[in-house]
Amino acid sequence: MTQTASDSALSADGEQRRFASLDPRTGEVVAHHPIHTAAEVEDAVSSAREAAAWWAGLGFEGRKTKLDAWRRVLSQRADEFIGLISSETGKPADDSRVEVALVMDHLHWASKHAGRVLGKRRVSPGMLMFNHSATLEYRPLGVIGVIGPWNYPAHTPMGSISYALAAGNAVVFKPSEFTPGVGTFLSSTFTEAVPEYPVFQVVTGFGETGAALCASGADKIAFTGSTRTGKKVMAACASTLTPVLVECGGKDALIVDSDADLTAAAEAAIWGAVSNAGQTCAGVERVYVAEDVADEFTEIVVKRARKLKPGGEPNANLGPITMPSQVEIIREHVQDALDRGGKALVGGPESIRPPYVEPVVLTDVPEDSLAITEETFGPTVVINRVPNALEGVRLANQSKYGLGAAVFSKSRGEELARELRVGMVSVNSVLTYAAIPGLPFGGVGDSGFGRIHGEDGLREFTYAKAVTKQKFASLINMATFDRSSMAGKQMLRLARMLFGR
Image 1: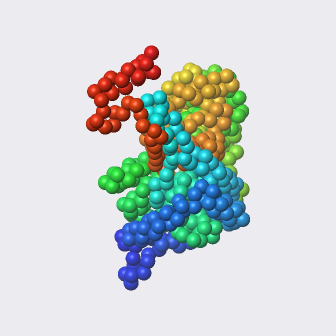
Image 2 (image 1 turned 90 degrees about the horizontal axis):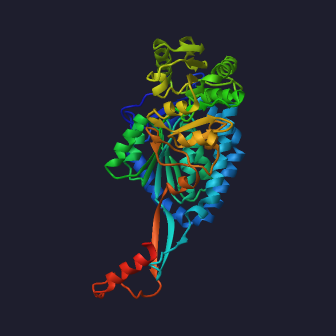
């Protein structure tokens, strides 16, 4: 059953219209949520603006105390949180547990380091401006609108929410229509810890609600989703010069060098491709393996992949495809690869039985096929042989996407990583950069721009404010029409003496 938006958020009798979030494993209703109107979104942003002034006024330590209290609430209610994530996405319980753990880790990092990263600091004025002092600090923007995805409905949006809040902003969050309950849970638990003002609010609905958030007067929009929708968000924000952070999809590659630990590389390839049913923007979708180790590597991957089965039980290897329309994209990519001469070593079209897709391992797939060029977002992986790892890097860089990548090599891991045109690389592992709060997360090209997580993620939700203060008058004052005729010559002479050698 596919959820569809209504023409109006109000029913015929004036009641607020609601929609159901569904368990993709069974189709059963998890809960009903309101379809917020444009007026309601605007009201949320307006009330958030008043809350933002109070929240920013608490200072870094005051906000840290509040965010630490929220983190304790999330910890106390972790089992409920885990169950809700699994119910709305269908993912196994262990996957949900990892997501909740990462939420807590990133929230802790953001609140702990915000003051150090964003607080006022002295800046050297330089030799020419020695009679001034200079300071720099990063001030909150005000109200941040966050539009989140369904594949990691807690960890991914919290990569923006945690850092925006720690930086001193209020947040209005529009979760995916597939996972509205997760967003509502995050907001309600925050309110338990911070009841004074509506610092963190949620609006639910479909694309129209997200569009309303873009037009609401928020001071920045942080979006995670498809490249196609990301372009629409940018276009909507352009008319009001609302800045945007856009984290879109990927077609991430794993490079296997001749000296790689093949068992570890194969396990990483399968985990990166199949965990979360392949619904990971930075997951492994392409593998380029050096020719001299390709047979052994592929054999290990195939053996491992054949053991994995999807299911709805909590301990299943992988869950269902959360968004029903994605199933047909997976089917199209697999069929196109086979029609173009590729081979299925594990699974094939018969592996696609909605809402589940069994692991599919393809090989000898042409570089211009859909399974190579477009994001599949399912438990599939293409393994192609290359003469050497450098050729694998070259092919990986041909993609229009540039989110993440992985390299397995005992001697050249960092060298190969440096050559990959992506925002993040794991060497001898996969996806580990997403679990390190201090590292920025984001891509280039069609994978978007801007960064969440880390120091860059904190600064993303601020503006830099520079202040200078004159300590004493300079002997050479160029900032007056009463300056002497020699002032400019003296200034240039000094600059040449200091910097011209």
